[in-house]
Amino acid sequence: MTDQRPKPLHDPDPYGTPPYGEPGPWAPAPPVQHPSVLSVPGATDAVPPAGALMGGGPGPGPYPAPGPAPAVGPAPSPAPAFPPATGAVPPASGSVPAAGPGPSPAASPATAVESGAPLGAALQTEAGSPPGMAVPPAAAPPEASPEAPSAGPAPAPGLVPGPAPAPGPAPASGPAPAPGPAPAPGPALLPGSAPLPGTTSDPALVPGPAPLPGPGPGQEQGVDPWQRYDPWAVAAGGPGAGVLQVGGGAHGDAEAERRRQARTRLVGAALALALVSGVLGGVVGAHLERNGGLNPVRLPQASAEPTGRPADSVAGIAARALPGVVTLHVSGSDDSGTGTGFVLDGLGYILTNNHVVEPAGGDGRISVVFSGGQTVPAEVVGRDSGYDLAVVRVSGVKGLKPLALGNSDNVRVGDPVVAIGAPFDLEGTVTSGIISARERPITAGGRSGDGSDVSYVDALQTDAPINPGNSGGPLLDTQGRVIGINSAIRSADDGTDSGTAGAGSIGLGFAIPINQGRRVAEELINTGKATHPVIGVTLDLDYAGDGARVGTQDGTAGSPVTAGGPADRAGIRAGDVITQVDGRPVHSGEELIVRTRAHRPGDRLSLTVERGGRARTLTLVLGSSGGD
Image 1 (cartoon, rainbow, N blue to C red):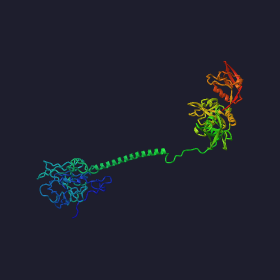
Image 2 (tube, rainbow, N blue to C red; image 1 turned 45 degrees about the vertical axis):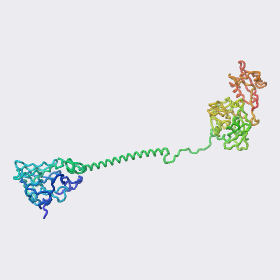
Image 3 (cartoon, helix red, strand yellow; image 1 turned 90 degrees about the horizontal axis):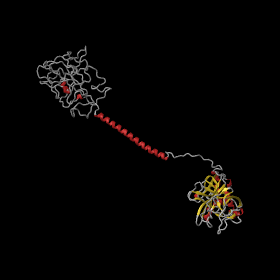
Image 4 (cartoon, one colour; image 1 turned 180 degrees about the vertical axis):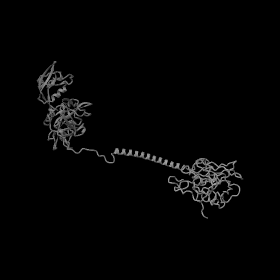
């Protein structure tokens, strides 16, 4: 048996445009079959087997043989010149007309393939149907009676139907068939073309295009079967109802949700990473800032310079003087102390203050420490409490560096000075300042109670810091020469003291002029004691007026003016008030003593004396008295 199926009127679609072929280059492939190839839930119709349609007898399917075709009415309107639009959907299997009464012929001329009917009137293959599965054509339209014309169902909305057949008379006999869809349109002949073999050119015999079936059960009017497919959506007719949808739906939403969650997780991870990075960066930065970074700290420093200094600078003066300055440690049975001294010559004589060596007494011990650290014992050569000076001697020491002595009469206020000592046992301490005043009368000591240890000094005042332990140390000029012996300070708590006050320096230091110290030191070295210049009078230290008053005459104490002494020879009488010495005012008895001891015995003085309200000037030569 040869295949006499007619060939298609057009060439196969080279792009396989859906729904008749594979996806084209511009359209996505539908993931599921077209809904029209599936039976609508609830329908009982099925596609008849191919054998029943090919004339081979009834098939095993549930489809009964069709009844006799009703008479064809008036010729329908001619078919359109072109096939229906691609949006038209072939009729579903449910569009097969119900079987009529009577026997079923083996094949109808309108449906037999061997009859040479056009392809549109014979077999149709649905898109997505298995190969070889034939779909029966629509039944011929029944004859319409003039009294009751039959109207088929309206075409599906949105689809382009063919022209409806013209109404005809009703069938001669038998009940009217149930309304069904219009017959499928046959292929239209182009103008001037011959009909295909086995076909007729009579327009009355060519069925027109069949209208599309209406919505089946579970479908809504106007629903596009190609809408996005959501396998999880519930159709309007309930579970299992409705047509299948093409494409995304819930699957697309789930994919979008997954992407959205992935983006959220990615943003959260980025924020967490930024936060952790910021915290770690701050911790590391703070650690590096506190510890100087990854490399060890290298601080800038000046290069080495020559160690020499100008001779008149503090450093130059200290470098020359320190080898000749010593520290004295004194201990006795009742007291101990620390002071300073300086070398006078190469024989080992050292000058210091009397209150420094006084704690040793007659059986104490004195040790001398040189700047190089050498420590040797020393012995007292002589001392004088009135001048607060003492001389000790060391033996067996070589390479002594004696300090040069200056002239205190050449000192002027404002001259720079350097003080060296051992304040609070800190040996070799160097301080500097200026001369604040000259010939400042001070008294120091007096701790014995009888006044025997009171010293009267016409001192040099300096602001160079002097503290306990500096006593006996040198006060140097810019040439490194000794111009004074540091002896006392004015402290804030207890007034003037001989370098032993509990408080420190407040910028008021006093030094014995070196001219006086040199004379006393020579006497102590040569004779073991010092001489004091005297006027030969007894002063009234309780006098509150201005000046120094000579004591009054009484019968028990004797005359206040020493008979035959310097004052007696000059004409001074008891009760006279001395107001000036060599033209310098005197305001108290202590100040007269200070002015007198600033001279040597035998010096000539000019005194201004007031007697009975009259002032007179007297001249006298100082006498001498042995020291203690």
